[in-house]
Amino acid sequence: MSPLPPAIFLMGPTASGKTGVAVELAQTLPLEIISVDSALVYRDMNIGTAKPDAATLARAPHHLIDVIDPTEAYSAAAFRRDALALMADITARGKIPLLVGGTMLYFKALKEGLSDLPVACPAVRAELETEIARHGIAHLHHQLAEIDAETAARLSPNDTQRIGRALEIYRLTGTPMSVLFKQQTENAALPYHITSLALIPSDRSVLHQRIAARFTQMMRQGLIEELRGLRQKYPLHPELPAMRCVGYRQAWQFLDGQISEAQLIETGIIATRQLAKRQLTWLRSMPENVTINCLSDNLTQQVREASHL
Image (tube, rainbow, N blue to C red):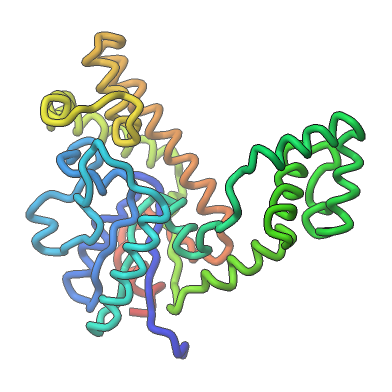
């Protein structure tokens, strides 16, 4: 048994059934749900984000839902700060944090920490560009190999941008970039015994069918009307992170007369499938995950058994 308190990460692509499983588990187990979703943080964006309804949230409250207005930004750093505070509070009350969602960058930030590398320095950049012009990038790669052999070995000798950045970091901090990365990882270690579960479909075509059905349902529920109301309530513009969310971006184009309703549905479904594909790519790159077929009939039971609950 681990001496660390437990925490569960329940990850999966959109429409994989994560929320339903989490809500079922929270009914009978000492769990509290923390949402790991960059769209659910926005107030008043309910239909297009597939936010759990009021009745569901009454049965199984979710942390980190409805925390900011659509005009505001919420970063991976803000998520990490808020999630760590919530996990500590949940654990102190004798419960288990269940982190559920599909924003893989947030999971990565929580598990690995965030880089404290220095921001770009124009003066040092100018120095390096002068050296490249005078001596060539191979000369700088050789310099890098002398002070940070590990980083130099993983970079192409012709990778001007990354070689320049690695040397810039060394000149600003006096510490090789590879050492800073190791320190970052060590400092980021979470004080929890984490069980990472990935809901992955055995047949992607079925997931695509679910995505199409869900997007069509969002349209019936009033996605266009929801966005129209948001535009009246808040000073929105299409470049805000909230308005770049899948579904809202296409609905905005429709309201501006750029596409038809049929095109909204078609492009919205395609964009959601592309999102799911990116999420699955992230999940497959995480070897620590326990994979569960999200199309299983007894999905909740499988998740419970894999979580050792």
